[in-house]
Amino acid sequence: MDLGLDLAPPPAPEVVAPASALVPKAALAVTLAGCAMVLWAASAPFGDIGWYLMGGLFLAAAGLVWSAGVVLAIVDVFRDRPTVPMRWIVGAMAAVVLTVALVWFRVPFSMRWADSRAEFAAVVAEAEPGLAAAEERDMGGPRRLGTYDVSWVRQQGEAVVFGTDGGLFRDEGIAYVPDGSDRGLEVDGFEAELTSIGGRWYLWSTLTD
Image (cartoon, rainbow, N blue to C red):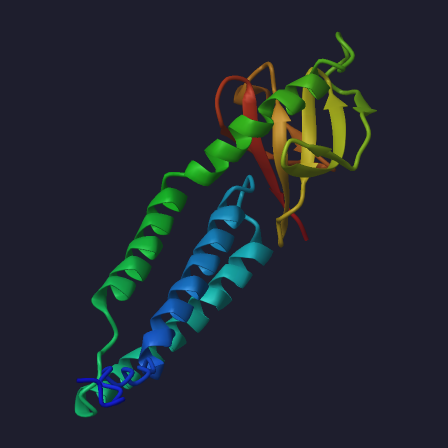
């Protein structure tokens, strides 16, 4: 017998997530952004100090956000609310550890250099053969080679030297040196320190006043 009564169950009350539920998502996003900046900084020949500083600021901010998340989690315990899930904390820690490992083994630079090496080699192919060791020839710049901004390119004897940005207290870049590191290399009157990156390619750097 229908008495016209509405026997449908009442709607469930809207569940509002506690503030602590939003904190770990924001913290993880800031952590990942900071890690990405650090990885990009590490892809420069000797590291880009500007990107390192930006990444460090983001990671420091993430640390503050994680600290706030811990405080809110403690408050949630007393209010009988869900606390910060451990998966967010573990994810952030894993991202930082992975970033440190990749930087330590120079993976960012190796990948970026592998992607850009062909364009550097194309410039080397334009070098003048038989140039005397004491002679220099300007080969232009600035230009974009692969994913690197190159300020200038010079031929010094058989070597081709590329100047890149990123150094704070030193000049730095990439060089093609057919004679190897025993040949020695001077840039703007300063003796350059050479570090092999495979074959006849080297990283070079000189301290500046």
